Image (cartoon, rainbow, N blue to C red; front, side, top):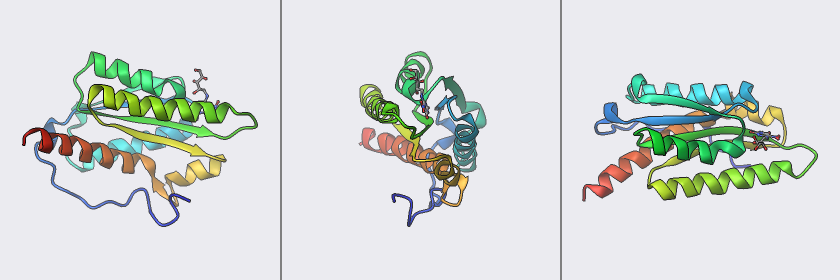
Length: 165
Ligand code: INI
C-alpha cells in the first residue's frame, strides 16, 4: 500500500522565497464532499502554515473528479495562479466507472499542468471503500491535502529557481 510507511501529513518545513506572493487555485470535486472538504481544509491549512497569504488562495468547485482537469484549465485561463491543487475522491463501486473516472482525471490533470507549464497537484484519493478515504483525509494515514499542498509549493519554488538560472 502506498501509504503504509508514510504519513501524508508529515513533511519537513522549508523556507520558500517570496511565498507571500504565491497564488494558489484549489479545484475541488463535490462528489464525496464529506472527504473532499477535509482534503481541502488540509491543503489550505498547510498553505497558510507555510506562509501563503489566505487572500491568495481561491477555491473553485466542480461536480466530480472527472471534471477536475477542465476546471483547472478554466482557472489557468481566467486568473493568475502559480499552481493548482486538484482535489477529488473516487470510491470503487460495482462497475468500471471508477476506472474511467480515475483514468480521465489522472491523465487530464497531468496534461493541463504540462500545457500551462504550472504544477497541478494530484490530490485525488482512489480508494476501495470509504474507510480508506477517511484514513487519508485527516485520519490515521494523515491528510492527502497536506501532502499535495507541499508538493504544489515545492514545484512552484522549483520553477522559480530553474527559470531564474
Ligand atoms: N465522481 C467522483 O468524484 N467520485 C466518485 O466516486 C464518483 N463515482 O463513484 O461515480 C464520481 N462520479 C462522477 C464523475 O466524476 C463525473 O462527475 C460524472 O461522470 C459526470 O461527468
